Length: 332
Image (cartoon, rainbow, N blue to C red):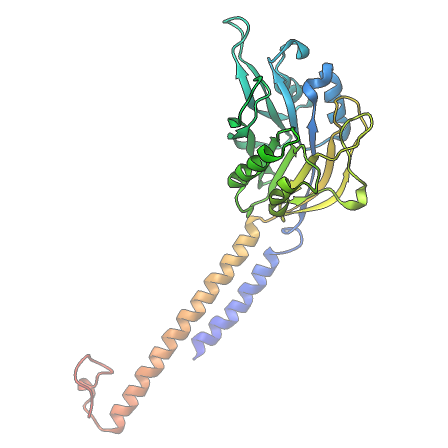
């Protein structure tokens, strides 16, 4: 039985190595400042929008009501690209509406949501959900794009990021359907997940409860009411940062600014890191446990064979005919 004893001792050593890999440095948390902001197409002053964002120095910014060559109100500029350039952040724009330009040579007129990031954006999609168009006089619910999903590399950790803008009308049925469809894209948040958006509903609204059950509302009660709309005298809380269990909220605020008809929401988060060291430690312990189990099984087989040999000797049976050596009739 010396081999299993030696292996058990080796496993103790492996456990020490694994614990070293699970040191506080490997399990440290990553600070992340995020913002959600309905910019109302720049409110006639896109530089003011950029200043409002820059003042909070966020790492991730989710924008709603973004014009891209959309209208005279925004001078037909690509607001998403301009803000990305001015803030030196990566940008992805997800259109809700798209129409042909005024002239054949003009780019398409688009309106939607955008994501700005100081971290690399690895991948992104523009999902379709039900909407009640604001561009038709008598709209009916219909599928339209504008639910942005991105994967962002936050210091080696992949974070799923969603950005949305829900229906504003008093009737909650469209928002209820939108929430249902968004949850199908979000799924169970086993990976770090953030959802930003203008939900056009207060926290107690029944239609957004399934969303608040899947993801945690990052606004802490200790930070006050969190009112964002209208910007001059806020009376409603309709702009949200929702987080998965992988995040811890440090603080939250609503900066005072009139750069839009909404105020932004800024949240400081800590992202729990799961790095390769933790995975390596788990793998080391798993392989060690498998080796120990295999060694114990081999030891049992050897002990059983020795017992059969001893039985044959006790009966003075010819060893060559004993089944402990050959698969032939047993000793009698």
